[in-house]
Structures are given as C-alpha cells and as structure tokens.
Image (cartoon, rainbow, N blue to C red; front, side, top):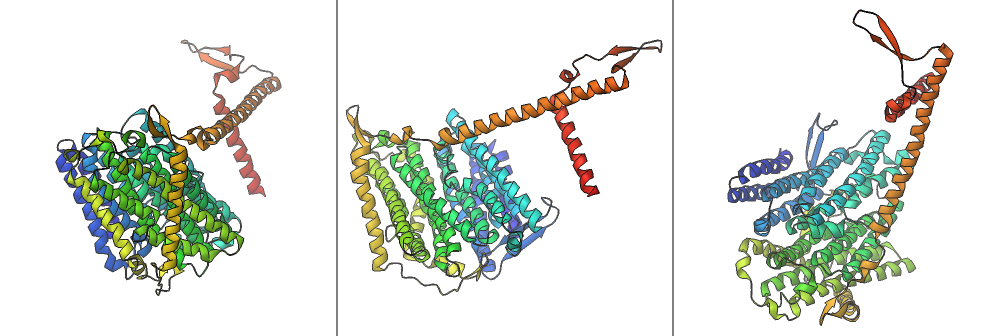
Length: 639
C-alpha cells in the first residue's frame, strides 16, 4: 500500500489545498507543507524494507492492462531525490509566489505534477510509465504558463507541443513493442527483445524520443531556453532538478532494459550526449539572462548523465564505474541546480530582473547569497571538496576505461572542453553579480526575503558538501540490492576519489575554464555600450534550430500533406461523380428525391446536378477508406 499512498497523497493534497486555498491561503500552505513532508517521511520509512527486497503491487483492470508498481533501490534513489527536493521547493514557493496571481492554481498543479512524477519512477509497466509521463507533461504545462503573459504562453505552446508530438512517437514505439513481444513489463522485455531482430531499433529509438525531449537532449532541446526563463523559479527548479530526471530515467530503461545495452544504440546515445554537453555549455557562455544560462547548463549537465548511461552499455561487464557515476550525477545535479535556480529566484524577487547587464554588482555585499551561489557553482564545476567532483571523477574514469587510442584522446579532449565551458559561464555570472562594484545596490534587502526562502538553500548547500566529504554514501545505498536494472553489482566497489591525479585533473579543467572566461568572455563578449561595459550575445544572430530548421520543415511537411490529401480528396470526389453518372446511364433513370403531398400522392424532383458539392468530401474519403479496408480484409480471409 505504500506505493499507492505515494501517488494518491499528492492528489488529495491538490484537491484539499485548492478548496482550502480559496478561503485561507495560510492554511492551504500548511496543507501543502504537511503533504510534501509526509511524502518525504514515507519514503524514509520505506528504506528498511526496500533495502532488503523490492516492493511490488499489481492492480488489475486499470489502464487496460493493470497498474503495476515497483520500488527497488534504483527507483528509491529517484523517488527520494524527488520528495526531498519537492519538499524544499514547496517551502521556497510560499515566499517566491507571495506577490503572484493564481497561487491557488499553481499549488494544485504543483501537487498533481508531484503525483505523476512519482508514478513515473515506480511504474514497472511501460504503458503505466507513459501514462504518468503524459500526465506530468500536462500538469507541468500549467506551471510553465503560470504568469499568464505573452512570453509564458509562447513558451508553454512549444513545451506542450513538443511533449505531445514526442509522446505520440513514443506511443507508437510502445504499441510496436507490445505487438512484437506481447509484454510491457520492464523486467520481462529484456528476455524477449532479441527475438524480434532489427525491429528493436525502431522500437528503441521511438521510445527514446519522448524521453529525450524531457531530458533536454540535443537536438530536441529547443523548448529549454524559452521555458526555463518563462516559468516561476520554483517551477524552473523542479523542471531542471527533477522532471528532467524523468526523461533520463526513461532513457535508462530503454538503453539498459529494453535494448539490453545494445552497442549501436549506446554509441548513438554517446554521440548525442556529447553534443548536448558541448552545445549546452557553448551556448550558455553567450547568454545574459541568469535563468537562460542555467537552462543551457542543465542541458550540458544532463549530457554528462546520458554519457554515463551510454557507457554502462559500452563497458559491458565492467560498468560499475559508469553506473555509480551516472546515479551520483543525477543526485548531484538535482542538488546544485535547484540551489542555483533558487538563488536566481531570490534576485528576481528583489529586483524583478535577471539580466546580468542590469543587475551587475547586486550581490557584492550580500555575503549569505554570495556564499550559497558559490557552493552551488563549485559543485557544478567539480571543484574538489564539493559534490560534482565525485560524480564527474567517476564519469571521467568510466570514459577512460571505455576507449583507447585516438578515439580515447578525442573524447578526453571533448570532455575537458565541455567541463571548462561550465567553469567559464558560471564565472561569468559570479563575477558580474557578486564581484563587480555597483553603488546602486547597496543594502541587504533583508525585509524582502523571509527565512523560509533561505532555509531550503542552506539545506541544499549542506547536502552538497555532505556528498563531497562522504562520497561512499550512495554506493552503500545501492549495494544493499545486488540487482540493479538487471546488472549485478559486486558490492565491493572502492575508489580513492581524492587522489593526486583526480585532483590535478579537476584543477587543470578549472584553470582552463578560467582562461576561457578571461581571454574570451571578458575580452570579446564584454563591450562598451552607452558609456558602460555590458555583455553582448552574438549567438542571437546565429542559426536557430527551431526557427531555421524545425519550423520550416514542419511547414513543408504540412504543405506537402495538404497537397497530397487534396489530390486524394479530388480523386475520390471524381470517382463518386463518375459512379453517379454511370449508375444513371446504366439504369436509364434520373436519381431523384421523392416528396409526398398532403393527399397521399407524390412528385419527383431532380437532385441538383452537382451532387458532389453538397456533401463534405471527407465523407467520401472515409467511405472509400472503409471500402478499401473491407476489400483488404476479404482478400486476407480468402488467402
């Protein structure tokens, strides 16, 4: 019953909170606190049980094939991270949204999104997972458009449009999967997938597309730079820290369970992950809005996770380093990225602005805010002593073990360049806001920020440091269960994280990133503008994947289909007209309407000559399609 309660509890919180919130917002906030706190407490209470054996429950006659839920150690990590970050974000939200409209609506959909997200992580049936995934897309859409302005609705359209389109492709993959394997249970698919031959690639890549959109994977990331800045900061925090992990989780299931770590699939995933790392980091360097910089940063950092997922398959039996590295970076990214977005939200609450050109120097004397941002930043760049160093070190080692020769050298260079980009764009934010002097922003603004906004950030900062000083904590958790996505872990994994070589590698990357910041960002992007120095963004004039590729291609396909269907439509109408003429000629009669008079007699009136114009041509199309289907069915029966 634990698993059912975890899904139902936020649904109840959404309904009760909405009803209560119409009369008393403080009571509504208390309800939301209690519900998210109970979710977190429930997950903590489940650990002693899950650490010994998985929890499973099956309820028939739901979603057609039943509701099959499962909680094992791998899923537990995802669910705990979700509930932990959601609880902290809930506390933060009550401060951030205090001056916003539609707060009641926001919290209702905030809780619905929590329910669907947990449903994704504990679904053992891929159709159940897909259903919760689509629910999450619709409920989170309401968070994206919360501000109800033109920009947020434009962002919402592309977010929802890409979610629906990719979801339909994923659904096609699910239907093919069931047709060829006769099962949708995640633990059973791997045992039969090899028997379907090359069709597994069509299924695998179809399934991956829907999850790749949510994971911001290149080239399906185009919604990202619009949605993250448009959303309220608490929504952006869960989008980046949690909902993107739902996409990663789906890709992990496809790669490891469904495709059984197929080499070709993993190589394609590795290429796309490096492109996400590079493109996300490179474009982040040019941005001027903090949330847009962090949005591209999320794309880049999730690329690291997807790289680890690809390496799990490419390393074969020796993939423990890739497994632990991927899971660690999933946790670490959630911690430091939510923290950084919360800091950005604090700045926006005070100034109503996030352009570094307009708020430069704001945080120079805000020591607590500066310290919190610095901890998050050092975590992201992988500074020794902070959580990102642990996960990036393991991913780096896994990459080194996977390849040799020229290919290894190339990937090593790409990995280092992507990591140095991270240092450069975060230095750009830190120096502009917390180092530069600006007398306009003197003062601490303490009256505008309540403790309930600072406490979640302090907890996240402590968590970041805890992971760094106790790097084996997640390894110990996962070793409680020897079965991890059908991969056996030895349980004796041991690594010296703070070795001289690991520290030296990290420091070299950080110095290289600092060099990019000083020699490129400060020299080339920082220019004189209206008597003061400001950052420019030349990437605004570059090729845009959405405007220069996706939109023209979609319009072209739409026009081609319109022409094709118009031709078919015209052809069908002509067939009907010709059939009409032939029938009249063959029978030597005129098709007519018979109208009866009051005295019982009748008279015949001719049908208008243009019979085809009085019926919708779609009717003809449906009729002809049905006719063709009947003929095909008869032929198949006869054969």
